[in-house]
Image (tube, rainbow, N blue to C red; front, side, top):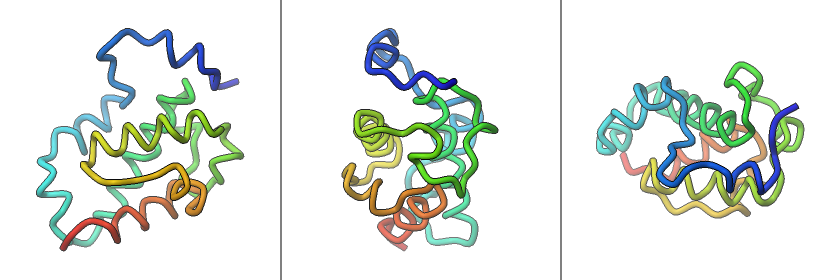
Length: 120
């Protein structure tokens, strides 16, 4: 069962990244301007980043978070939605609200929304 409590999130040491190693290699290590270049596959890259970040927030592996699953089905609650938006804002340099997360309720849908927000 994934950890979804506020206390589980608050117990992370300061400065701990919530992204997994694959996220780091594929997105965090990629200059933001490359993500901003419109190119085929960018939405898929954003989706992978979302899945990895969400899995880290839930305390599970990315394989346990299907990209097409609704966020509520994998255990996302309002507190974790706020944490997810903050992480995505920091990692992708975008303005995103928890309301947008709920309006696009799966990693695939939210990735397409974020892709449409990026210039290019």
